[in-house]
Length: 189
Image (cartoon, rainbow, N blue to C red; front, top):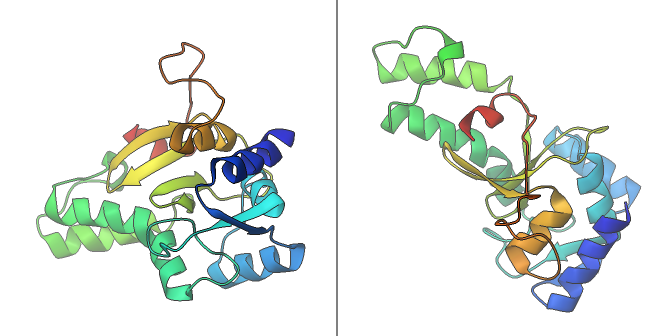
């Protein structure tokens, strides 16, 4: 996936973050075991080329090598916690969950149960996410803020362009056509 190595090189040229050596197979295995997910193939390839890190450990690049486990868990939990916030405070209810209960506690209990089965999203940068899953690649990068979810890149390489600059398609270009394929999360786009 040369585009992903190029994306890491673009980050270096833009001087927008520090790039540490990429994650090793052993480090990927340790992270995936500790947090209970597998990186998508393109996300893995990108992080194997170079590990972006910066000083903003809460909002920036997740530091999969030396990051605070509590912060990494918070970043991993962000998408589901955002949906739960909207269930509790903004009357969000997914039709697939059945009839909406009358009390907030009942709604939250059902939502938690249903959300336990949705595909896992993995942080790329701040509240930008890619779906988890070995054997998958090419998913659009999603900006996830509660149930306000938008496309932020056709794929990981395009995301680097959209967020940080450098060569790539502009969103006004008719070829910029992201298509989400991941169940549940795509319903918010």
